[in-house]
Image (tube, rainbow, N blue to C red; front, side, top):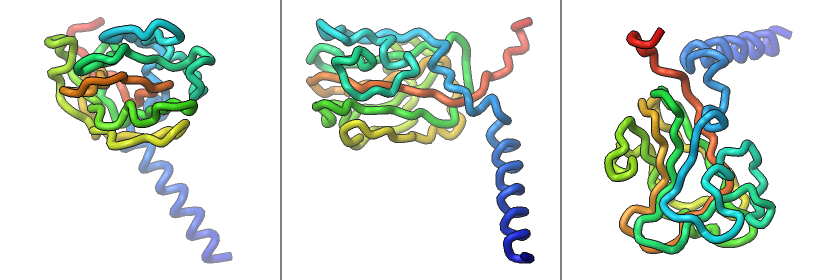
Length: 177
């Protein structure tokens, strides 16, 4: 009994510390659901930028919950969170029907600038690969920004995936009442 009691106490302490360090339960909300999405180009069917923030992680492109750019140099997708947030992590779900490699090498950028369509902001992570229909987390260590971009910088190809979830907390703005 003594061992299970100490394990329970450890788990409880871990949960309390996690909530306090991560900024409370607000951290668990997907900020992307309230944002606006756009992209560099639009593939002709089933490919709207907003599909990637609809809350549906269905990895089958023809079900209408994924997006795709045209094949081009440096295709990008951008999310406007509408205000600056401190972003802890981003979760991306890749397509499950084909084309898993289309996201390989993409960069996740975060910042407040729209210069170069937001593609000059700081890098949170580089996506090496996400297998078909898989979901991966990318830690952003509380980077601050209003915009989240995903770009295949300097590469010609399609950019496609099915869902982006962004987790963080708003940055307090003393000028906002």
